Structure formats: C-alpha cells, structure tokens
Image (cartoon, rainbow, N blue to C red; front, top):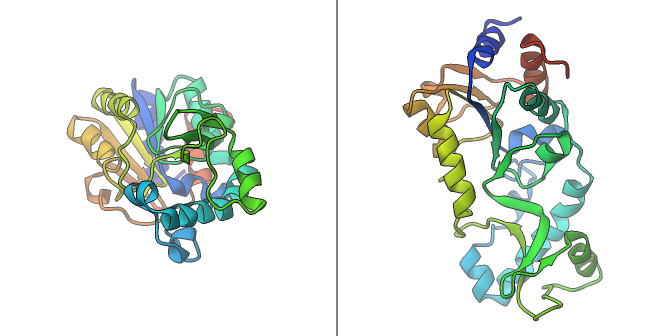
Length: 251
C-alpha cells in the first residue's frame, strides 16, 4: 500500500463527518468525456451562456445541438468502481454526503443516498415559464426528429435541461447545504475536479480553511494541490477502490 493511500485510509477511518466533492474526472471511466479535454464538446462548441439562451434563437439552437450530441453517451453510462466505492463508504458510515459538479446521476445509480448536485441534472428538462418537468428522452426524440428548439407542450415556453448553464446561478438551497457540510466536515475528498469552476471550486478550500483535512485525487494538478494534506495523481476509480478496501469496505 502506498504511503498516500495509507494516509487517506487513516484520515477516513478517523473522520466523523467526511464528505466527497466530485468532478468530471470520476465519470470519464464510465465513458462520459470531460468536456474540457481535447475532442470534448467544449473544444468544438462555444458554451451557451444562460442569458444568450433566453435572448437568442440561434443560441438556443446551438445549445440543443450540444445537448443532442452529448446525450447518448450520458444515457448509456454506468457507474464505475469509483462511484461504487463512494456509495459503499456512505453505506458503511464513512462518508456523510457527496457534493458533485456532475450532472450524470451516476452517484445515485451507484447507491449514494445523499448527493448534492451543484450543477443540476441532465436527467430532467424543465420549462422555464411554467416549471413543467419534461422527460429528457422525449426531448432527445424530438431533437433527433428534426426539432431544433423544443418547447413546452403545456404552455409553449422555453424548455431547458435542468442543468446549470454558464451565467446561471447555482440552486440556492443546494449551495447552502453544501456550504454547511463543508463548514461541518473534518475531512473532504476532492475527486476528479479541476477545482477551477467557481463558485463550486471554492468549497474544498472553505472546508480546509475551517479545519478539515483536504485530500485531492485527480489525474492532473489542481490549483489547490499546495493546500492539500494528501494529493494523489492517479486513476480515480482504482484509487478509491483501494482506499475503500483499506478501511474494511468491500467493493
């Protein structure tokens, strides 16, 4: 067992209020590409700002073209051993909650019970006018049939994925709960996040500044590496599985 894995295992065993903070890197093993990576959607499309979505028909067409291309990969994705390890940690009382920047729902599929989705979910669409929820499978069918900008069947209003776009505020209740968790935790595992997208990226540092131990598990360096108690630059799924095994959790 490496010294880093051993140290994280001890921190997790001793913790009373551990939480995980996850980003796109935990889901790449499930076949969901990190949109910032070369070849990802954001390397081919300019992200659509929320205000542009509201104001511009052309922006809405571009938004839905991006969603149309990305949805099939997200739809078929399954939890990997990293998601499963975190779910087992929660089930065994080693983890209080998962705060995630991801919109793929894989933490819930793996069995995690308390998941805070800071950036919303791709598993639902919503009418911005009347609040009607729309099945994203139905929206995808419309897009594939040639509809460029789906509208609400109930009121004719603009339909949007229930995800947080650039320029759109994070859901206030979710953010407040996440902040409270970070202020109460004694250990935060920052996993698979570049830790650059604000305001979410500030949460692990908030926990650290409030006395928590900070562990960063990510393939690439992050801006918070110098603040962390332990940094592991390695494959996320196998690393989490190994940590779980060493705190007597069978994955």
